[in-house]
Image (cartoon, rainbow, N blue to C red):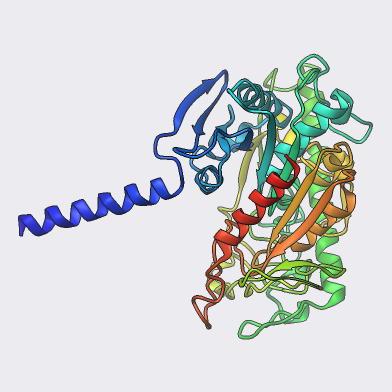
Amino acid sequence: MKSFIHLCLFLSLWVISTELSSFGQSQPLYVQLGSAKGALYKPDSGPEPHVAILLAHRSGNFMHHPGTRELTARGFLVLGLNTRFENNESNVIFEDVALDVRAGVEFLKKQPGIEKVVLFGHSGGGATMTFYQAVAEMGPAASQGKDKFVHGDDRNLSGLPPADGVILADAHPGISVTILRALDAMLIDEDDPSKLDPDLDPFSAASGYKADEPFVYNTEFRQRYHQAQSDRMNRLIDKALKLKDNIAAGEHVYRDNDIFLVLRSRSGGLKNRDLSINDSTLRPRRLLKNDGTIVTQIIHSVREPDPPQDADKRSGGALPFYSTRVFTVRSFLSTIAIRSTNSIDGINWASSNNSVPNNLTNMTVPLLITAMGAHVFIRDNEIHYEMAASADKEFIVFEGATHNMSPYMPRHGEPELYSNVTRNYYDYVAQWINKRF
């Protein structure tokens, strides 16, 4: 029995070591970069890299992001960076995140043989990387403007070294927008989670909701709901601005900052249940299929709608009371606040620095925008492409890819339908980089 256990242990360790070596990096180097920290991945063999790639997110742990190993295996030097706000979403001051990205860029530019640095923005990392690049190219003015609630500091954001290219990997428009679209539109009092408008219940028959089959919300309900989400965000912004002014005037109990709660702020969106909302391109776009071929067509997400929510979990017809997000006045205004008239297509992109579309209007380096064909950000990434100022820009969707660039598994269907997704994705990214740099 002991011999069998030892054999199993040996085989497990062998599989792990084989997987690591197949990624081309077995021993990442952990580095401290001021307030940030990172893991540096270098190919174990092959030519010395001349292109370095930086992965980072405002608050997530990207030191072990799958892209660090996948991209190293394709011959690049890769740094997975964690900012000063790692696992600390409640306190993110978004403009300060750029200072940690700067440390990563400067570190990579000093590595032997490195000639070019490319920023890789996955999910919320898209706003992080595009904000950095916009300020690096245009100066602090890119972080300022009459519509913004928080302006970047001229001294801190001057002289950022620009990267040579940017890759967006299923980047959402910004956490500001994702929270806007997640707000429970039923709430009519930002201080009392029990005060709800029953006419905005997304689970009522009047909305078009059907619990046992795919459905589409009726047009009138969608319009009212998305407008009500914007009304909620605008109320929250006004509340935070008033608190900020009172703090500055010494009229608040706290003299520097305070906690700021956003009630009923998770899973309030309609689009996860209704596949007609922002789930396809408006124009024919390039789609990389599982077999490696590329076609041009109107692209629809292959994802399935979220399962129906049990009525007894809806807490009075909508969302449970525990769906509260915790911020501070400062972090809310810096990272979350964004003005809009409609949460889907009436957003003032210029009102937040945490806004990929606005940032893309202020950067010009080569840009690759990739969307995952089994997730919810296809149309958002098409908007990124439409608004981007870069002359060298490209947009492509990966069939059957989940948000993490892994194969989508349909609830009912072939489990191997999208088996090549991960390899297809990173191969394409590598080819794009090598072609330019």
